[in-house]
Length: 177
Image 1 (tube, one colour):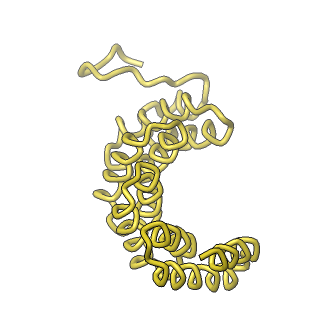
Image 2 (cartoon, one colour; image 1 turned 90 degrees about the vertical axis):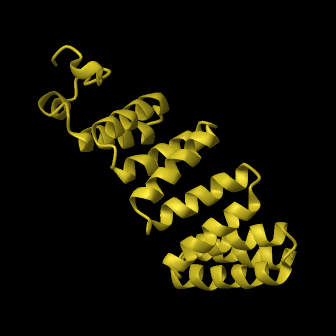
């Protein structure tokens, strides 16, 4: 690899053949990042997602996956920033809204979480997990009726999707209201 052109940090290639052949291919770093993440190498995955974004700063999936990883690593603000950028790049990506809602909930921004889950549902009315989480947030905020409606919708969607365990868990939450 040439000596640090344009003062860009060197991108690690390791011994992966595809990266040796195509060191500037963002997809290769993204794919290796996913593999590393699945294999438990969080630091390696983070480095690869960073490289992906350095090479291709409009690769929305890299921001989504880096956001997931950052959230699992406890970097909630970093995750939030990644989801914000992913949504800027792909405003109809339901996963980004759902994941950002989860992070906002963990950051105790319940209203922000509610808005993100609502947007995910607006984009995909069959997104059962978004109904479920919005129902939990509504219950937390004291909106028992809204919580019950969302949890009932989630239970029905989980059943339609063949996810009986999730449906049963949701019905239990409704009984707890």
